[in-house]
Image (cartoon, one colour):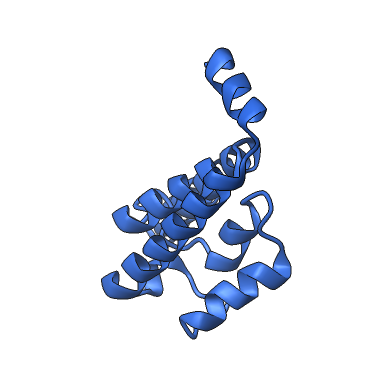
Length: 124
C-alpha cells in the first residue's frame, strides 16, 4: 500500500467517525432531555466504538436543557475539560460520567410534566 493510499484510507476512516459522532449528536437533540442523557450514558459505557475521537463537551451540549454552564459544572466535578475525547478517558472515568448522566436523567424524568409523558407514549 503506497503512502497516498494509506493517507486516503485514514481520511476515509476519520470522516466516517466524524459523521457517526455528528449523527449521534443530531439524535440526542431530537430526544427529550432524560432520554438523551440515558442514551449518552449508554454510549459512554460502551466507549463509543463508532466515534472514540468525539469530544465530550459537544456531546453534553447536544442534550436538551444541558447548557454551557451546566455542562462545564458537570465536567468540573470530574476534573475534565470539554475538549477531552471519549477514547482518551479511562473506563473508570467514562463509567463515573455515565452514572452522573443517569442520575441527571432520573431527575429530569421526575420533573417532566405528566401530560408530556402521556403524549410520548401515544406517539410511540
